[in-house]
Image (cartoon, rainbow, N blue to C red):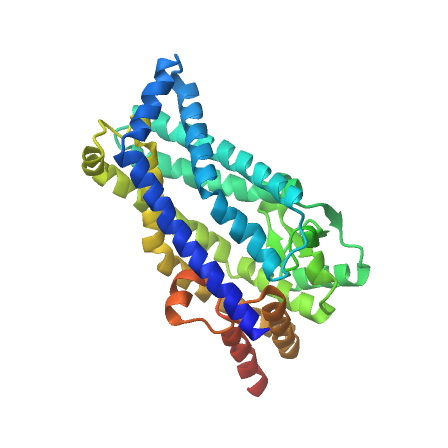
Length: 365
């Protein structure tokens, strides 16, 4: 099992790095060869203008990227998962999920891009205005995700185990958290990995248990993992992450605002308002994401450790926490003790061995 976990993790890291480098290369070729500008000119020659031009241009870019990236997404998302017996999903269902996620990605991206160009044409300090809109949009999306997006991929139903359901409500009350209800989803249709979540904002807050977790873990273990999720809310990690992500968004768009003229000149483009420059914005997002990833991952690991501490304190179930981590490591083929460089870039949670060591400190104290 340990060898399988290491091998699986190695493949995931390698494919992620290759995919990132490959995406950057595709964008550079698209911009540097003049294909982006040629596409804009061609669409205009068809009489397409205004916001419809933006929609068609974005669709063309999405389709081109999807086709060129398809070997990576197919291998990492389907073939590799089957190779390590982490899914029983059929290829037809995988393609359907691809279609759904692609349509959603396109629609959300179109909303953001159309707003980007509108703000760009109206405000001299556009970087601040567009940052505010993107931040608000992300908050709205987080609120709507459990209601509209998750049901597109999974079937919801109220948790039938009344004893466990009441126990979860009792834990929520103990931690002073209001939840709409406790649901289970048919996670096993897509993956054999286990997961649980406390998702939504305001009146859409709800507990979601994967059937792969509910059916294989004890009530004590389920309570511990949900205590961890509730701890994030009680410790205001959600608000802190929104604030951090808002600063990162502001920083990114300010960087684009201050430096775009130089890169536009490199790629022989006139202005950022020119549609052919849109791939340059995508390039900024990828590169900026690489640069900020270690800091974001470090902050996330710190929050996860705080949540583990509070979950252990609230439940006083150190043995259940350790057994939960052992099961998750085996079921999800987690890399229990990664190389520090891998941890720096890829781990937004502390590695399993560190989380178990934390619980053992509680046991010995």
